[in-house]
Length: 306
Image 1 (tube, rainbow, N blue to C red):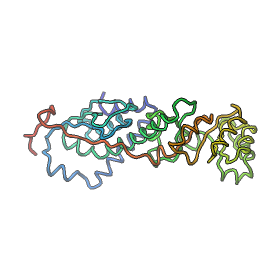
Image 2 (cartoon, rainbow, N blue to C red):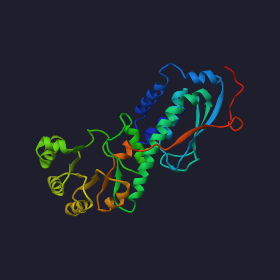
Image 3 (spheres, rainbow, N blue to C red):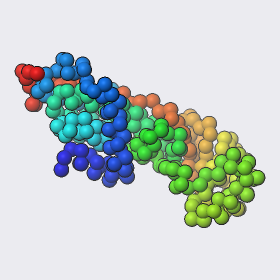
Image 4 (cartoon, one colour):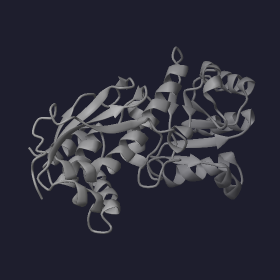
């Protein structure tokens, strides 16, 4: 099994569309090769030079995207680079910890470096921030959930990173479930009217209704809503809504949530905390690629010529 095939198989096992991820990786690599070649590496690195390098965390966090990195390395090198995982996605890592080792043609490593790091740092940042939220609500029944506020074309990977951090996913696309928001309510003439129109049109689709008052939340539940999104509710209103709904529907707190108040919101009894910032505002986890000295890097050939 080639490195690319192996990486794709692991991505598929993680619930990702491996063909989609491969297309994304190829497009990302093509950005760096728009001019035809890596002129710096061609000028400075002998064609037959070999090297070994390690992806190393520069800060504590949660890693996500190592199989994506392996796919980047495989695609950039036509399978010439060999990889050895030193950590697993979803694992907590510390500054200085090696995450993955790659060996093979030095030019291939340099070509793949930035694309691999861009994806690894971003996805690990999403996983790290998600873990912070998950830890903040520990001891409650609430789960931390993402939104569709994702980077265009990176949604599947970002939602995967949320899972690596211990969070759960909201819908992937507009067809997966219905979410009746304020503009839908305005167009339909009311919360209950909007819900009923969706239910009549798509009877087998789960329907979530966004509300901004306790009364509307109760109305939505009594109309049959499966899930109610409580938008910008204060803590007292969250507690009141949980009491009045009394388990008849799942409840999701959303809007203006912070890590500082996450425990209190979760303690109100809601089922989910919807946090758009998991994907749209996550700082990267700093990871670097360190070439090993030739005397410790097996297979290096610093005597090779162009």
